[in-house]
Length: 227
Image 1 (cartoon, rainbow, N blue to C red):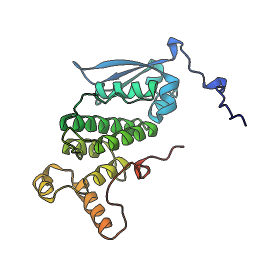
Image 2: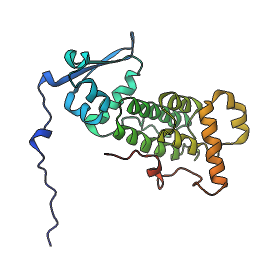
Image 3: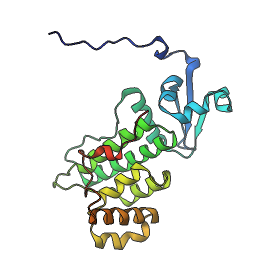
Image 4: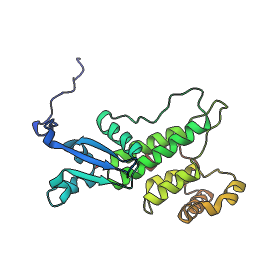
């Protein structure tokens, strides 16, 4: 039997327009680090409810074809744009041997990308960030050691998301087996909501209601359901 060949044909209305008039300018950050990005309206609006609303004709952004994101990091938005066009996350330095600094920095960047996905109402980007963040958290450095996300990573996600966020849930689960002494020493630096979530998670584990550690096998626990 000949295996079925997947069709390459799609609906004509899904074709991307390369007409310059269909480009949106996204101004990210503030001077002197501000950057301008040009992105196809059809591509970004298909992914982001935020941009879909901004470009629906009722707002000045639609008329000017310009959206400003002054509070966001241009470097992280650059990663976002690369993801839109390539389907890949350009966050791995590929340096060997990996150090704890490499791993912790990549987790921080991926957490910031998750927050951008939250802001732009882009579930696919949030899921990509979650998968990659989990992968990096399980990687080992040259000494065979893996690391939980840093306090700054936790702060970034908790400041940029709301209660019930699956990104928050992942960070909590990656801290489940953190040493009590370290937690006590740094408790004042951590968001209160995080400490509450961590306490609830530990209680659920104690009562047998929750798996102990985050893993690639249970990654679906942290992914948004796509429409």
